[in-house]
Length: 410
Image (cartoon, rainbow, N blue to C red; front, side, top):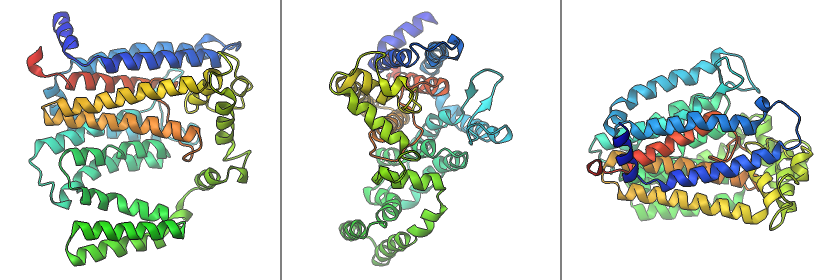
């Protein structure tokens, strides 16, 4: 067994593992800074909890690395069904922080099954798209893959957890494109969302309508289908006020304060304002480890997880943030290249799906930190505090390393 592991590890692409450990180390240094000077028990400090979390995370990575790919392929649909049950279990428990996301396992920490849904959905999609010689030239071939991702995303959205629901849907389009779907069909899938978003500004909506007309003209679909597609999206845009009314008050405020934080500086815009203040005050090289005033005076909210980049920016400056961006860029680009190099269709689709998950997490976390998008509760992979998320992230690393190996090499 040990000999097999050594041979397999030598054949795997271990750089992704090394980069993940380096990012984890940066996270630990930052968490220790956040809690410097605190008198609470070490068992209640995120730094020590994160140190403990790395043990099951590495076990999860090892398990995902050693499981044969044919076993993953064979049992993924069963695992998909099991995780759907686990996603529903939180509704039977008590509400935590106004959500139903966690399962109480009798420990000081909870278990968040939605974190595992992300990569399980990706593998299920990879099996479906690789098992069949799908006629991807037909739009109907895209429907079932969307349903596979949409079903768990809808359950998680009701928890409510909009950020995770979005992340679950993100890999669908890249994986469909990887499987050979026509770009025009992918355009048809995202056009309704863009129509709704641009309808709040008449100039943007006019420009989008012109773009739609050009794309439909170049694609040369059936005339009736093209006309129906165009006016259906226009109609959706007109329904935007109705859809806006369906959002909860806090969601509306987050969107409005994105464009004008002064509307609610002590409420919905508070997190963005404090985050930007922390990053701006750090300058080029930062104030130094443990010297961040926004951090240690507790002006900066959720600093251990969602806004840990703001802490890094304040204490270590733009240089540290730039370094992290470079590391993540190398990590994601190398993962995408692996998906190109793998001959097995199932493995290639799985790897590109996982790369999409990491890309979405990194983009959303950095973008919300600097106020580019509304605040979403999405942590930064390997850096942010969170046991279930850390375990899930390292399992994905194990899958990447496992599926990138040619079986003939070991």
